[in-house]
Amino acid sequence: MNQPASQPPAAPPVRSDWPFLLGLAILSGVYVMLIVAMLAADLTFTTTGHLLAALRSPEIRFSIRLSLITCTLTTLLALWVAVPIGYLMSRFRFPGKRLVDAILDIPIVLPPLVIGLSLLILFQTPAGKAIERIVPFTYAVAGVVLAQFAVACAFAVRTMLVTFDQISQRGEQVALTLGCNRAAAFWSVALPEARRGLLTAATLAWARALGEFGPILVFAGATRLRTEVLPTTVFLELSVGNIEAAVAVSLLMIVASVIVLTLARTFGLRQPLERVL
Amino acid sequence: MIAVEQADIRQGAFELRGISFTVPVGSYAVLMGRTGSGKTTLLEAVAGLRPVRAGRIALSGTDVTHARPAARNVGYVPQDGVLFTSMTVRENLGFALRIRRWPRQLETERINELAEILGLTGLLDRLPRGLSGGEVQRTALGRALAFRPRVLLLDEPLSALDDATRGEMITLLDVVHRQTGVTVLHVTHSAADADRLADLVLRLEEGRVIA
Image 1 (cartoon, each protein chain N blue to C red):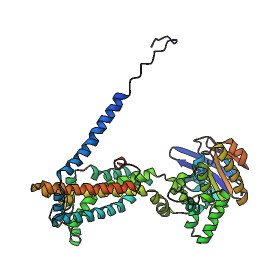
Image 2: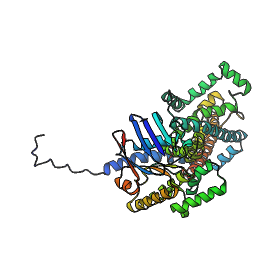
Image 3: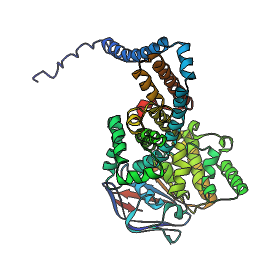
Image 4: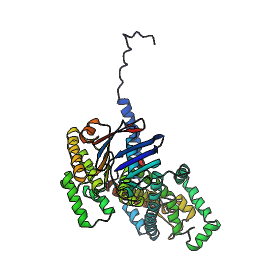
């Protein structure tokens, strides 16, 4: 404090950047290696024979087909809901918005089993039973889609919210001055500019739906040739000790995920999936 | 004509009170003021993008104080152009015409005419992403002029341009103003722009407009 003004303290020598960079590289490398090692383990464990045997099984064929159909349906439903919610939350202020925002995060943080249980109980209420008389959900294929939707949609909603937040509102304002009403500005300006986000949301929703297991098990059951999707197959095969089939089916899901991820990236996904959350 | 009478405009904590000014028909008015003085807010209020809490705004003799932006028929060029990124230059220029359901042939003629005046003929099929600052501003200007509005609102149309492009754009704005006779309200903080273009200089200082 009482240093003479003529003699400022000398700057300490700058220490090397290497320890920091090395630390970054090692910690990042450990996780990347873990991912690659897991996939490699699956690959080396499975033989073509196991894969073919799995593909020949009628139960597994059914579950592949059901998985593809339900995931696609879930994705369409999720987008149909996520786009308006994302747009509403991004562009408008209204009372209770913070509460709605918090509610939208619940499916992301809630344990999946609890979601399944909550759905099961919901459909035991008088209102739920009334719906079931028209469309059966519990232990039915519709239940598979609903269980997938309950979780996957939350991810699509987050993605669309971030997407619309990143798109400046000014484009739509210009459209308003050029003669649009709000709907026309949305369809002709905001939505086309959100197409990458839309693709990201679809990818995330599809991948989430494909991996959904807990809620489906509780709400839609694990009946072979009825409500069996790929994660259910893995579970059922594991539970009877058929590890080869379980790994073969897992590999199928890995391949499906990789294809979806590649498709999304090829069509120009700007950011990796994790960054939107 | 643009007439603002005793208008109160609020945006968040920022507030303009009792703003009054008039821009006569066919005039080129430059509204000057420091950064943060509320120039853009005022321009947006005229465009209908900000609510006016009190007072009155009239365009070409019609009260538009509470009219929606689409009903005001003003050409609005926001700062940095804000082109529609998913559309080509041609589609940007023709946007207001498609909304107004102009016949295809008239639309094409109008787009070509604008492209000619604004030097965009070679760029019509390009997307905004690769355009230079000057090209973006010219496209935004064309998009705003396409439906022949009687009032043109410009928000710092020259601020992002380099000196050479700036000179060209000033000439262009002058030509467009003379050819169309449109009433212009041009917001800027640059006295040089005002000197070159203005028939009428307005200053926004401490929440008041001084002619």
